Image (cartoon, rainbow, N blue to C red; front, side, top):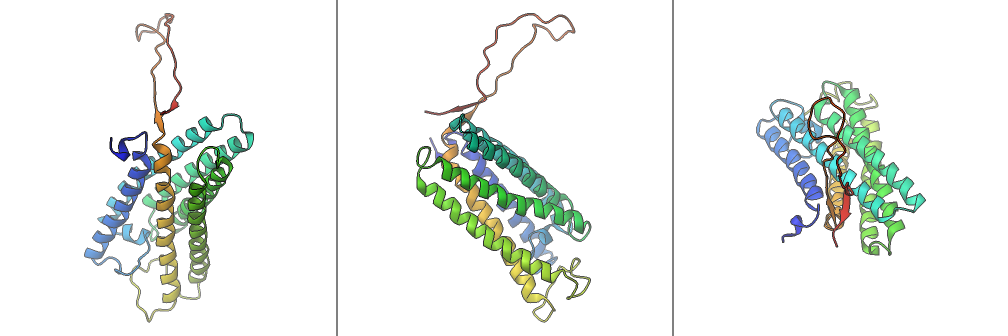
Length: 266
């Protein structure tokens, strides 16, 4: 059996591969059509102009669905491993909410381009990166709470390093983008897709875009740490009938055994 066939390890793998493919394909298309500069454009700028914006939006919507599935499975796994730990249960629920909000932000970023709906796009970016960073932080705390009983210390340290990487990138992006869009460098910054080294704010622009790509890579790395955990989990769904027919009649009693939605592979 291949590693991706074990449990649900294909979920975080598919999420990272599919999202990376969305970035790469839209980037190649935008560069080929000269819609953006080849050196460190904003990720969203590679999905601003047709036809790449169609590809960017469609693929990121699918990525959002994969992300929801991954976050939900992680929630169920932590819950199953710690059914009586009140602190972990609360953190786990908080992580689920934060993760779902981050997925909503990803879909918003995919469907509302920066040059058309700037305020909505920024809200989506805040949900994706800001709330997503908090999700990573909560999951790292959970990893700390569950080691060494549930898993080794190595997993916690890897996730902690990725969270620190994400935090440094987020701080750099927030600081430089706030200065860049403060109005000191002109009012056409939002619509600007091509930059020259002589342009005002070029250095801030490059730092912001580099931080954005760096932050995305930290997200990829974090979800890849789920692969080994997801190899130990499987998901089962069972249909329960309430009658022998589909007519609007009194239900007939039927004996059904309802299994748990989640079970761990031994």
